[in-house]
Amino acid sequence: FRLEMVEFDEFLTFKFEKQKRKDAGKSSEKMLLFAKLQDELFHPKLDTNKETDKYARQFGVVFMKAMLQELQDPLKVTSKYLSSLDGKLLHENTSLAEHEALFGKKAVNDDAERTHGAGSRQIQTYTCVNLGKGFGVGHAKIQGDFSREKDGFLYCICDDDDLAERLRVSLLVTAMEEAPSVVEANNAEILKQQEAKHHHMELARAAALEKATDAQIDILCYYKMYSQPVCLRMAKAFDTAMKKISAKGKKLDTIKENISIRVIGFKWEDLHHPWSKNGVQYSSDELAKHLKMIIKEEQR
Image (cartoon, rainbow, N blue to C red; front, side):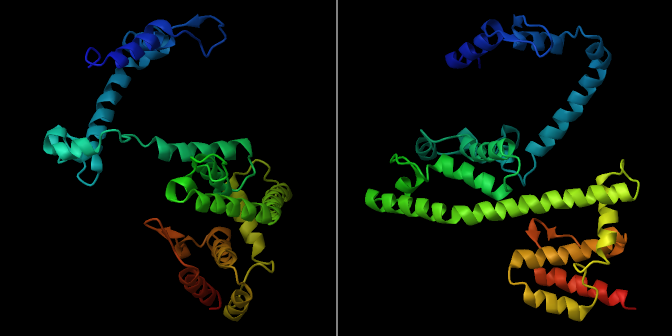
């Protein structure tokens, strides 16, 4: 394959024979790292690699068998590309028209991975940023939503450049108008998170559990919350509280918090209820029904 593709041959020659880089260790000497890595892989010189070489070979066989099993799974799209299964998407099993239709098209998922990378960078750079907002910034940058250049996403979906420009300006103005409230909400979330962390630390100190795990502190925290106003101990009080909460997210958080008080704080693990199933979140009504059942059991 290397002989058939000149570009690939040039790439390997550069990586293994020309590109020199510093080792991750203390040495400042530049070396052919890929060549060194390949040599150590097949002809280990380090004592640790020599001692584990036998196990690495055994693991390699197990890993490849598991990988082949996954690739050949008929429920996965990869099985359609395998010659061993005469996959329907093999080159010989697809028409000339299909081949020609794919000329010039992307055969990788770089665009999808790019948005993940952009979102991750926002979160890593600004550690207190909201997860959804961080990825939103990544999407906006990649799609050029606020770009003045006529290569952004809005210009791609609009036949009329004037319409695209008006949409861009509208989006920009909306973002500017909502920015203060978004910043305020984000700061409130950060403050709430910091207060919760401080509360956990205080509880741990009070109980002489400085070295306690997060799980142990959660148990103590939820146990203490049972005697606080946040805990709804009567069905009537629960119904009244739910009527006062208009935001769906806040309502769902309140229900989850009250279930956690019992399941985590009291260790009533038999009353556990998952927050989602098969990737679909349970609604506030479904979780509220479960919480009412717990409250009813408490009254017995």
